[in-house]
Length: 409
Ligand SMILES: *[C@@H]1O[C@H](CO)[C@@H](O)[C@H](O)[C@H]1NC(C)=O
Ligand SMILES: *[C@@H]1O[C@H](CO)[C@@H](O)[C@H](O)[C@H]1NC(C)=O
Ligand SMILES: *[C@@H]1O[C@H](CO)[C@@H](O)[C@H](O)[C@H]1NC(C)=O
Ligand SMILES: *[C@@H]1O[C@H](CO)[C@@H](O)[C@H](O)[C@H]1NC(C)=O
Ligand SMILES: *[C@@H]1O[C@H](CO)[C@@H](O)[C@H](O)[C@H]1NC(C)=O
Ligand SMILES: *[C@@H]1O[C@H](CO)[C@@H](O)[C@H](O)[C@H]1NC(C)=O
Ligand SMILES: *[C@@H]1O[C@H](CO)[C@@H](O)[C@H](O)[C@H]1NC(C)=O
Ligand SMILES: *[C@@H]1O[C@H](CO)[C@@H](O)[C@H](O)[C@H]1NC(C)=O
Image (cartoon, rainbow, N blue to C red):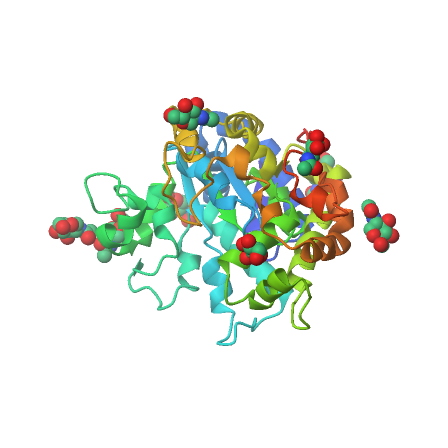
């Protein structure tokens, strides 16, 4: 017990300074084992206050699952996120890191801090949110919340938990498009206490470039964090970005209709996407011990082809209970004959049939340029290259190789 408590004290000193060294992690690991026996008869018996608080902390986290959906823009993450949001046992947040990024972006859309610091801020916020602490987030919300109350919570409507009582001051759950209006301001203290009543917290983000940036969180034994890494054919991502972000991709539209690449067509974004993918899968395929049991790679194409089967695999990997209603939600939202009216950020229509439709909407010249930029990444993930217009436009020949990416367990 003596040994246990001096380590705890040290730990508290370090943690309160906000230092996240590996030493702390190993202290914490050493700490859990001697105190776990104590935890069995609950923490109330522990005389030493500091030890008791930490014991309660660890106890409180035990059994709670934390999930990160790591994706890129236009890769299908809204749909994947819905597999969690539609489950009322899960507290789901849609892109809370948006607030951090916008705080550190100037009027010209350029970052005001370096990438390393930004990634650190992302990690800190994620850690706090997984602990159901919404107060750190307040520092990034504009205008600053008063008395923990704000009306500027990014995409609140995309989180059922934030549009349902008690966080929403209504008698029952409010639909996504009515949430802001009906639920009005959000009380972040109440969001925190409500979050604590959930056993599973899932957060979706497109702002963490690669899994290596998440290592310190994955290694933190308090977090029990698992990552679902969503990838998609970079050619399909680009086609979707061109038609969604019209202003930003003007030069690509000219390229697409003329077949000639304008000088100002910027390839760096798609190149970065591919580099990030490669860095992640190379790390994952090398099976480092820190990722064991923590990482699953999902190709959007496989999810779209057979959503219920893939969703089941994801739930199994995460150790989550399938929820009644999930199957029917998936069927309704992947089947255009049933439900034709979603928006671009909604979900996928007739998903199994439309998944390779980008091939009809992208000029061969763009396709070949991306293939040059991304050839290694595409080979790693099983996306076939095309040489000519016949191959590109013949949809009866899929470009998605059948591959099984077994989770590393
Ligand atoms: C934790 O315990 C292991 C094995 O008992 C030991 O090798 C290691 O040095 C300890 N770490 C710390 C920081 O006390
Ligand atoms: C420990 O906590 C108890 C009750 O929570 C309190 O009465 C006591 O003063 C605390 N002891 C110290 C040393 O802080
Ligand atoms: C909730 O709504 C009711 C009626 O609209 C209002 O009287 C009450 O003050 C609201 N409570 C909070 C905490 O906003
Ligand atoms: C916010 O929620 C907390 C916890 O339920 C409550 O104590 C507090 O009074 C609420 N604040 C406002 C302004 O309603
Ligand atoms: C889509 O909906 C139609 C009409 O309800 C139904 O016949 C068909 O089996 C559904 N397809 C899938 C894949 O769910
Ligand atoms: C590219 O051009 C073709 C033919 O003009 C058009 O059908 C397609 O929608 C365009 N693609 C995008 C992504 O705008
Ligand atoms: C990708 O292209 C480069 C340069 O053209 C080539 O050296 C490399 O072998 C290609 N890689 C794959 C996997 O095709
Ligand atoms: C498309 O591909 C299929 C399968 O490889 C082939 O049988 C068919 O002839 C092709 N169609 C055209 C128009 O090239």
